[in-house]
Image (cartoon, rainbow, N blue to C red):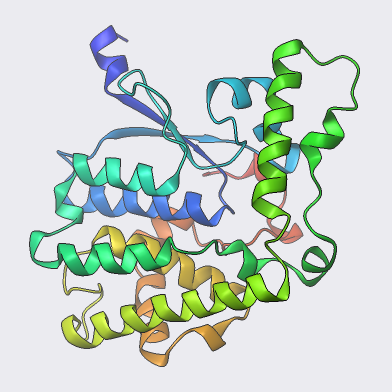
Length: 271
């Protein structure tokens, strides 16, 4: 592969049961369906959270110091993109078809609402809400054979974990997230009422980046049985997308939550 070809090549560091990873994966599929000529060349690379590959020295030091997925790397990028919204904005720069000018303000407003909360507060299990998410980076720091760089990276990840997750599951925090999620759903419902006339996508016959994000979130809320946060119109819209070839291409028919019947994530084929 030539240097020029390498600079056009991107890697999406991905876990198939990460909600925000799925948003990006679906966005890539929709962009490619809209215009294969402008679609960036993106390789999907598994980061197996079940085996803590996100806490490896390589991942923390070269990809994402926060140890999260998704992340996007390439020789063409000055630094990795480590936030799903940043990756989405990058994708829309590559493929403006995903944000039609006529709907830009509406898409931006609803995306702002979607990113005003972290969905984990709504989708985590009862025991994890009760006891919190273990700080595995802090636990790994007890190992004696860590390199200096790995130890420093785990220390940074441990601090991030405490800042991000320490208060996420208090009743007040969960209530605030639920209110923001309802605000997102209400605005999405209004957009569907105004623009969708029984067609597949929010704004008619062509998908946008908002379809990618909204559908993934609705799928996760459905999988964790939080339909109380969804309106009937939003659920009906999502059912149509779930039956589409585009959604099947992104998910390969899997739910957004891992379960033992799916087998080891490392063995999933296709990823």
